[in-house]
Image (tube, rainbow, N blue to C red; front, side, top):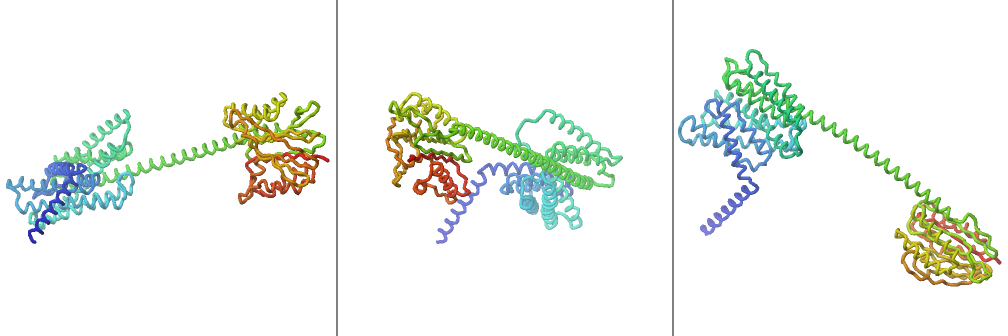
Length: 596
């Protein structure tokens, strides 16, 4: 049983180890860890050139900036690279000073120092992301303050405290040197973070997040500013008679204003590098005769902390000002676009209103100006135009009777599909075609077929519904063709109801359509009502249509009245039914009544 449990445990450990290895090798995490370890150790080797006894602590530690930048850019999984690099360089310290292999105490010290370095980077990155809630730490003044407080000053407390305490507990430094070691450690780490982390983060964003060609004059300006920075830094840190370190501030400000975060961070790092070189060689305002190299570097580090903080704050404030200016400009452009859009809409509305007015004029010009006086018939007609001009049309035209001594009249009500100017123009063409065909003395079916063929040949795919009634007022014999139009209503004097239904397709729907006519007799007291679909389709507030039933009920009640009175009463009924609901289609009604 114990052997099976051991085998199962070993299998599980091997599986989890394999999964962990695969997770680290996935997405190039393992190579990144190794590269980070090498960079950390190499930067630490440079910093340890100015280390104080016992060799683990220095006032120049760029590795801390590399570590924090690596965690912020690649995530927390990169931390083994920090630990490996710190562990390796601190073991190298023991080998260098003693010329002996690492001892147990030196290995423990290196491991604890590596733990402090990786913990400081992890905690700093976590708190920065948690508090600032952004990956851009240098484009807002509040985020810059948070970076300085957490990344520069706060996280370095962890590494300095763990490292110094580890050296004291392992008896590598005495208690008397604790405070000096801690201050050196903390200030060296803080200066390294301030100089290196913003440089790597800002230039990473500039290199990989922006596109476009660099203008030539910007390159010239950058080179000129670089030469000026080198010159002022050499004067500021190389001239010892008078303290001139402040002369680098105008150049740093110019770098922040002209090249924003990328220029500011590069200028800070270059200024710090030049200051370190002169201070190590005992020159400049921070290298006094009564101060050690470590103390001089600590003074330089403090100066660069204040100078770098000021420069980063200025660059962030300038970015905020530019962003606010861009927001103001964007708001102004948006308002102008809205105004242009409003003006465009108004112009389109005016154009549409003008088009509707023109369509209304065209439509009204086609209607008869007066009703002809026809012996034996009472005729009345009216059309109410809707808000959107449609294509309703009615007309009363004389035509040659079917007998040589007879004269008939054509009563026509038509409706074009669609609305607007196009519908009115098409109806005008229809009127012209109809009058032309009437001159040819054709029968109603022939007229309808010819009209359908002519309309089908027009470019626009529209058609016309129409009802055409030919009536001889003397004999009372009527013929009609209904091309897909609303059925006509024939109300007999006795109250009986007859319909004039459709006898064919709408005009222009198909090319060759044969229409058939129907015949009816129009007696004394009979009423014939021809309407458009707008009359039947009129709606009230509830969406209910007026309908044919209401129309016929009204005609029965009003059949004893004159044709003119019947038409006026019918429109009153429709208006009373619809109320304040606007109608979107023309309403047309033509009423014929056979006089006694």
